[in-house]
Length: 409
Image (cartoon, rainbow, N blue to C red; front, side):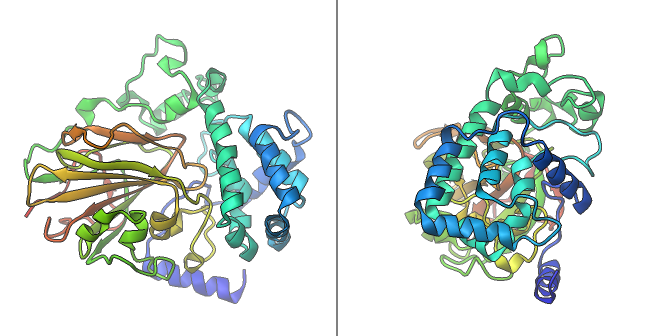
């Protein structure tokens, strides 16, 4: 690691707490997975097809994109530079999207997010920063992820939903993920789950996430860990700098509603792969707008330094640039005004599905949508004056969906 990288890491540590990311903290585990994965590329499906074939065509026809991809691999320092050619990268992507992650009872060794593990070192290079922001490359990669999401929605992906040692229904997994807290039927094949994604966005038992009874309560939209709390947020700000300030107009993709949140409040939380992946309405009201903004997926803020978690240290930045949902709710309580719920995809976890549409009326605690396959990030944005703050909540606190996070003034 260079002196500059050390300096950036130190700057980041002073700004935000480090959360457990999608990859093991042990670099040895990631390096071992990469080495074994590359060695196995000759086995199984590796000939590019579908969206990966389209990506190959882009790389052959677009000199700039090809230049960045080649430079990205070349800039990864030994011994982490195991994927060294374009064809090797394409074979790796083909292998990933035809497979399903296995459970490992040791989280220090578990690689549940293989695309993050494949790209983690590449993302941190100068060329990687450039190419993962390239519109053509990002669009091609989105299609690859869509193909993979389709496979993870298929019945064939249920093969890892078993009670064996590498199964996501093993006794160790049941304990780790509190599976008995969810709606499951052990008498059914795969306990009632129809696919790997169905397992990951499983529904929690309603009695375990009761809606706070205080009529003035604004409740959490999700389970997760508080990443950042901000007040007096601006319409435009330099979200890419140290501190990653929120930029409302960018976060809300130019929505005219952004003006209503100037000088307001943001609570952002991180959802790990083990968290409940559905999100709910923080207030009762009317949905004034609901959309999914298709944007970046594997882009990090340079100001976050060397992010070895594959994206979790850039969540403020990602609120402005990543694929995300926007759900604007006009609260029934006029003192609250409008609330914006912003589910944000990170790396391969960029499938955002909305369960509501413009014009719908929602009750506090009603489901708004879900993420497929794993973790992500969430912002709840409140207008100025809606609340006095978020009580005693602070960074790294655990929050639960439907529990009070603030009270209307």
